[in-house]
Image (cartoon, rainbow, N blue to C red):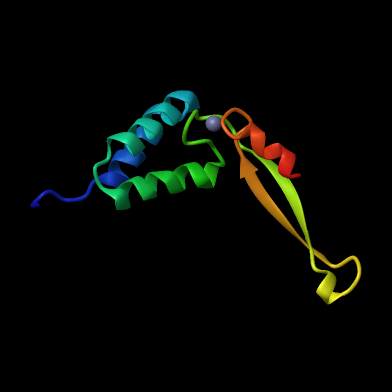
Length: 98
Ligand SMILES: [Zn+2]
């Protein structure tokens, strides 16, 4: 293909155009993920959602939930805390993992 990859320019342009309308920007990015034929490019747009903690399915803000992972082998009361993001709309069912 002789066509340069303009993904970053396109994402920048969307951002500049719709900075004041985050919901339109959000919709544009969600459309991009679906429209991009190239897996690597869709991953780049997926990262945009990751950085903003937005749901790629519905565009909602993701909620966080902290999960404690106990390590009894390291002593009593030793645990690691994982923060995971979930969409209250799409993965609401994950809440029971808390
Ligand atoms: Zn969602």
